Length: 175
Image (cartoon, rainbow, N blue to C red):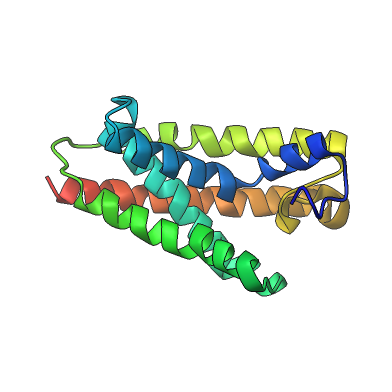
């Protein structure tokens, strides 16, 4: 990204971290690393892992249903693309599913799961307003307008709720 950048290095780095895919995969990496090296009890929490499983599942769903067909990466970029949007989500959801669950998760927990995506949406729209860069075409106010962005945001929020409901349901069935 740095070599092929169209804007200053700092702006390129900011843009990189505006992708939900990147942020979710970072959470997956932090979770795996902290559990492997016993760094943090926060990421050992089954609830936290459930939230991360929801986020990375949304990454896979949105990419494979909406975004996969609008570009065609090649070479190393294609490999990285598949890792971030297919392999990592599958591996993490399998990890989550195989984790020992000894707690019941209240359906109210879904509101906590939604905090990160809502903060993400607000942040990305604010950054986009000032930088004129939106990480995803379905959030690009300049191209599709406010109404379409609101409709798209509601649709993806609904996906978050449905996927969260599914993960909480599955989780509670495994106790």
